[in-house]
Length: 488
Image (cartoon, rainbow, N blue to C red; front, side, top):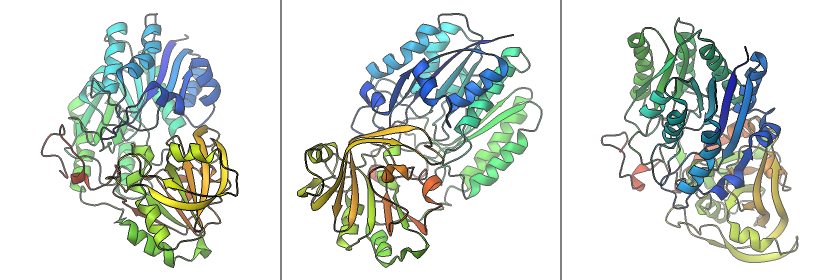
């Protein structure tokens, strides 16, 4: 029997402290594709969509994929953008379907409602009714709400951070949808939550306690009636009521017993809430280490955790760059500096020209420092199109928009217009910067960079520049998060 499956991808991680709204143009800047274009661009890469399509081919599904849309993490999604993105899905839902497959993030907040994914599911359920099987994939930085669990039978999160198992996750969720559509299983998803902003290490899975938690989850999945356990480290830069780490279990049968399984894992997250693996250096401490670094064993990689565009920071903090310049660093690359005004100005400058102009710090100087007046030589300018070659971005295209490389005192600064975190070597190499040969690589990312940069690094250190994603949560104006919530 060929099942008719409706699918859509609508993804956003919303930093509610970011003052810039996420508009429809924000999605166009990342990707906003109709169904056929999405399958052509993303249907054979390491994407959830590709995994779902693998399952569809295996079982002969008749798939209608309506939209693939994602914006870089940023401020609240506007109502106009949200309505425009959901419309292709809800319009198509008027037909007759055997199941629905949704590729979501799990941390979307709109300017009219705190639970973006819950609202997508509510609108969909109003059309398809309460019983049609719906499978949802999530990023493990989801803030999973009770409504999401009530409105979808199947929720499955990636199991890795850096996220390298997107395609396998699509397959896992697709297989569960197939079994549900045949009537073999009748799953529900249960939720355990702890009053924390996030898991102590943001859910990283390359090291630390999440390794054992996932091993335990996989062992429990061998039990009868347990189909998927998802461990979500949460997204802390969301001032909403249902923020925080969750453990989900998609299951049937003895629900009390199954709930106890995820409470056990959630208890471990709570018990280890003080056990952070990263040591967050100040920018001056990071610069001092950089000054002493000898690059024989590979570059020193400095990750500015706090100014990560991948978590909705502005990406224009100047604190770390200023510290490196003050230290007299050379043979160093730094990026990205999200500064569309400066990148645009440099498009009209000849390569090799020396210029003096303000760089960075233009959005909210109180988070990570104001503009730096810099004199340097333009090394590259043009269109910031990148095709990745690493574990996460391999074969996928991104655009930094208007882009330039300014060399200041031996530091090559990648200045871009569209915000993306650094998670692929090609994001430097495309613009004439070779991070493998650099003495120091300073980049803006939290954890994803490790997939591509850990293999080339002699050492990795993490700093907190005081930008919008600082781990100093007391600096952020939380109003809606319930108290007590650790560490508030």
